[in-house]
Image (cartoon, rainbow, N blue to C red; front, top):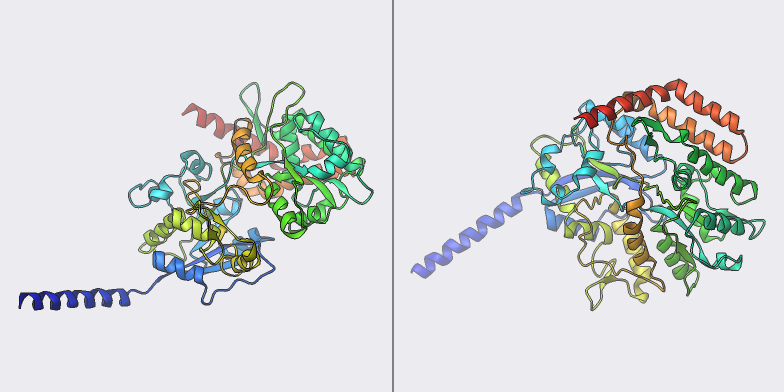
Length: 503
């Protein structure tokens, strides 16, 4: 009898639990991120990746992809909507519209959440210095999207370099100059340096390599000053101007969209690039998969010394690339912990793996050593599945505690060890990375007018490189920058900087 009663009670408990499970609807979270995969449409219905996320978290994820071209404008439009996505990626954490919106109460303050190690262990594992870099008035409104530091650098076509008579490592500025000049002379319809409308990045790489500050510097008196007032900044511009004059840069570089940047190298039109070093192995692998290449044709450059032996590197980022924000209009205070918990999961091993790599047997397989890989006969299938089902979900990935993907990706693919070299260079270049002392500081002029002031400098630099304006005219533009708000911004940064070091 007792046994019968126990069985009945057990059955009742099972029925009760089943009833609760059936009653709990998945919690829907809408997310907006930039889209880079434009050649294949994202598939939402019966998406196995979304199903796996729901099974793991109880969250029904709704992805809203917006083209990366003009993404900042889409973010600004979204902020004015009455029903914005609950979660939103922004690519520029210091954009004036983001700072003003945070101050106006558009986003949830996450400061206390990221300090809660018990409930949000992965978010709490983020580097305090990086969180501080995205702080606004001392409060944290977003989860930073972690990026390798310093990441930026120089890579080039190794095979073409050998063709033009350059067959050694690039270790000095003189080496770089010689290589660029030789590449410029390869043919009349090719260019040494691949530049596009994102010329600000190219300029930063070479000017900082010459010894200029990263946006802002601190002079011998302990005061903040803008990078263009460093003689090394003009030295970097002159290096690019010379390369342009000898036919080493496409005259139309300022109007070439970033979406064409990769194709220029893939069609053999340019042989060197100042950009993310991880593009080195991506381009190598593209050539292997699409052009039948069976040898190493790309090479990434390590530390480059100036004449005095010193080395300075532009880090491109401050340990992150944008942030993930939670809109107050889209998320109630009651639901906020659920959303933060989901973002915490995104930063854990399972979340990182699914968002970045997809699912085993769909977008990757696991070899006998426990590493992710794609068999040769599955490359097309895995690539198509990744584009359809994962698409650009990795833009939601944050990686706050570092790479926890499980199973991990095999370090090297194809015929080279360029992925391993990339990881090594991130470590090797980091001690030489030049920090922007003003990044965690706030200048109200920069908030209000920074978007109008920055193009004065970058546009003038591009015109000077192209020979459209003279050095005197360039300096005139620098003066105009100062008169229209740059001098005031410098004063405000100085006030904030001296206040910060006095604390």
